[in-house]
Image (cartoon, rainbow, N blue to C red; front, side, top):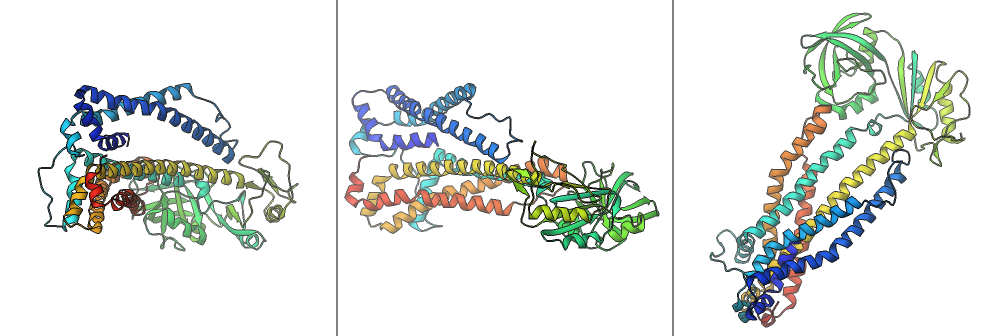
Length: 544
């Protein structure tokens, strides 16, 4: 972008550099003049960038602390990094120096004749535009885009890098979503565990309580001996009911779970690294009620369970299959999702004063030190739920941890998309500079075209075709380079951990392509208005 800015500045001052040559300046002096001009601009731009970056850093630290003061307690506030500032100064001046070298060479090539004839083109084209495939104005616009090899390369790279970065960081958003179980649809606000099991009928009683949105339970049996032709070991057998099977469809990597729901011959298995099981494999369950052979009907990326997984992970089955294999042992875990409330008051968990008869409560996550218990409608809901649980039941309140996980997710997503917005803005500014440079280099040429009969509309279409050529080539290059990068990052970050198959990120790809074309369309508005306001005589005589 900086190189394109200097290039635009050189094109706008072609006659000035020609006059310097007329006055006796050598090419080396003109080249040094352009480089010193760039360094002078950086002397103003670098401090502004350091100040803006420091303010953005402080704002980011404040945002992190406001999201979760406990999680980001060690993040410093209003501190200045001398190393970071020195690195910013060094990088800023080096980038400006490197970006000004090419425009300086172009300015040094300007001959004294340029100052006399008023030409603003650095080089003359030796080939004509191909008008066989397109209309005259469209063909000339495409020809203008393809004639400048270096400018075409920079513009194509600008679009391609934006697309590559967008597709790469899109994987990070998926990673955040997959790596936070608290954001899963089955995440409960309250979780209850009982070593002796809980009667399934308690689910209907809990759902009848005001303030409860959903309640669902699982029967669990850990350390189950399992064998198959591929591998043998131990696994945790977990039963799902209708709600959990519905959510499991979103976690299904391969296979079909319709045969598992209500069936007694098919199971689902959770993915694990190095897993040898495949769809259709027959697995023997050495259960307490006897051996039972079942078929693997699907593979899940993750499973909802509270007991430890065995060496072979989790095996998900229907309640009927669990009962035939282990027996009616009752629900080992029950999750409850509350409607509306978070039970948070002044950033602390709201809980009831004393546990009800026979019940005990525990916060398995984070509870603010010295937090006072409060009473609310949600507290009464929790108390009512606790009163339905057996004496040996442990009730954990997960709302605060879920809230923090959600805040962390949104924080990460904001930073990721914020970085993408910065990249998109750089792309837009680069397109603006490049299009302005192209128009500045051909201002007199546009005037000559209008003098021989080209209307304003044709001139507009010619400039639009030039911008469209940049966008098309950039999007093609970005897709060719960005999709393999997206697939590679997806495999390393997600597929190897959760076994999820890579799919073409069509929505993200369409979004960034639309953004690139919109940027190109927006970039040509100013040059088009500039040309439209000039008369034919003024356009030909105009000196940049």
